[in-house]
Structures are given as C-alpha cells and as structure tokens.
Image (tube, rainbow, N blue to C red; front, top):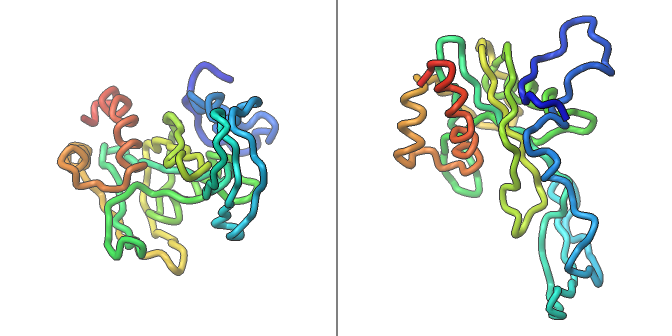
Length: 217
C-alpha cells in the first residue's frame, strides 16, 4: 500500500494497470477486511430479503456457548461518501428527502458502489450525479463501518478538491437540493448539530485538517 493517501484521476492515455486505485489506498483499508478466525459459529443461515438490500437470519453459537438468532445485512455492500470543495473553498452539501424519516436532511453526496467500479470511479460518478461536480484532486479519508451491530456495509469517504459545478444528474427517485456554503458555515452547522446524517458528519470531521492545511478554515 502506498505511503501517501493522495491520488488524482488517471490522465488520458495512462495504462489501466498503472491507474491509481483508491480501493487499496485508503489509510485503513487493511483493517476493513474480514478476519480469518471467527469466535462465533454459524449453525444455519436463511436469506430473507434479496439484493440490493440483502438480509440474513442466522442461527449462531457465541463464544460462551449461547445459541441465538441474528438478523443482519451480510458483509459486502460498499458505498462512497464525497465532500466536494471548490477552488474558492466552498463546501458543497445537499439536502435530500429521506422517506424513512419523512424529512429532508443535510448530507454529503453519497451512493452505493456499482458492479465493477473501484472507489474513485464510484466517487466521481456520485459527485457528477448528485451535484454536477468534477474534481481536480481526490484525498481518501479513513473508511469505516456505519452500523456494525446489524450491517456489514463498508463506507469509503473522500475529499474532492478543486470541484467545478455543472448540471446535476440525480436518479429519477432522488429528491436533492444542492447547497454551496463557505467552509466556515458548513462547520458551524456541523458543530451546531444541524447536520444529522451520521456518515456525513464523520466525513466532515476527518476532512477538517486537510481544509485547515489549505487555508479554507
């Protein structure tokens, strides 16, 4: 794994085999792989919901010998979260309608990785779709498990710098409003508890040192 987490998109004509791959360049990528040894034993497993929202019900035996039923989302789903920042130091957030909440909440652009995509390809696609953005520079931030008690999903956040904005291309069922804010205002909202999307708040937290180093905060 390279020492530096920083990368950029592949220049035209660069061979595919030498293209920087952020999937293996995240600072804590190696901590996000499954362990070989498992202290709990799976006695049986039943799939009760199909993809893309796969859900399993397992019968397991714990290290203490207790048998129990566990309902969870198996490991495998991956998603990217992007904090876009323009050359002027403006942070680009979104307001999105979330049906389970029956509410609009402030978030960072994000979405699930599609089949065959690496992290950078997925992040660039979501940036374009949700805010019409293109980035000059990408910095991967520490990846994490969003809700490990019930889900095996892994989230990969990235800071996108030098972003230019054009026409967004959201999915037909997405209700999204773009918010372009001074970096200071974005972090005021974070500290005031006005950004309620958990992963988005963590992305802003990890991005802060990079923005301070660039003089944006």
